[in-house]
Length: 144
Image (cartoon, rainbow, N blue to C red; front, side, top):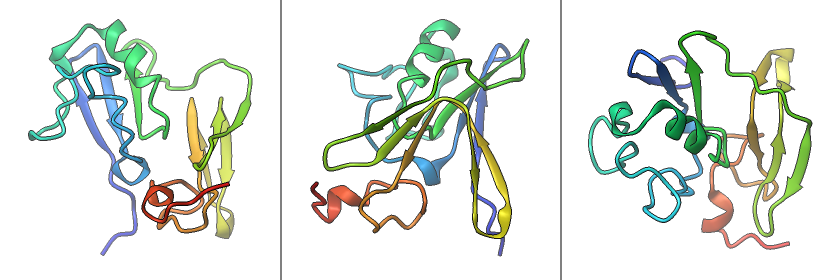
């Protein structure tokens, strides 16, 4: 059995949405009508991402809002997901530590993982995907 995390890609030929389910904190930002793109992100269907449901620009803007970094994208012309932004660290009330910007995470055993855009780190200590947040703080009623 492989310990390699699941990574799924959905493409329309112009943009490829990359989804890492183990990083998802199920914030609903991507699919809720008020905040998301329900024509693209449909959690009750298979496959749940319909890349043809919006323009490339709309998809890019929505994926950039993903609080956990579980969603990212690759543009056909660049094949690059890194974003040129300054680093920002934000503590969410009763939630994860959010890090915005390009970072390298060094795991135990010294393996490195390069992450672009947004990364949510666990503060409650109960995540099963440490050091990343998996949303367990909500279940255990973690508070500051």
